[in-house]
Image 1 (cartoon, rainbow, N blue to C red):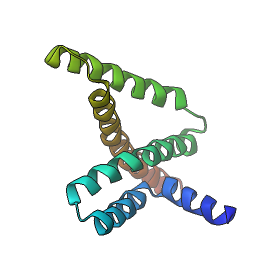
Image 2 (image 1 turned 90 degrees about the vertical axis):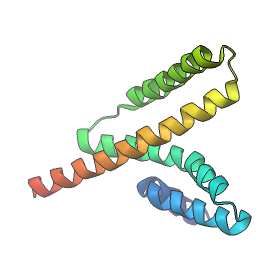
Image 3 (image 1 turned 135 degrees about the vertical axis):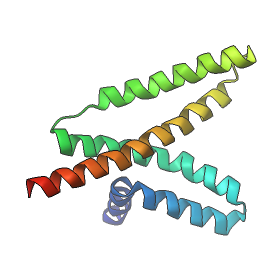
Length: 127
């Protein structure tokens, strides 16, 4: 059972787009709410995109830049907090966290695609 769970987690980290799609399909089938399912899939798969970007960077550059990833995430949270404070004059922490988390999805899904393409080109050139 541990091997199956490890295989599922490893696959989700290696292919976060597949993880996003599977979460979306399962929740659409269960709830029949496409908008809710899309948002839930984004929220859940963000962690897989973050981990995937980390492991691609380790594979491409040979060492971890996890501290940069954490700084980007903290910077996004600070940015969203300041933006929310400037526009609403009252900080609603739930909305700030949700906005920062979804921004991280956009940031890391884009980074995943760019790093994947860089990795493919690098492998093609070295072979």
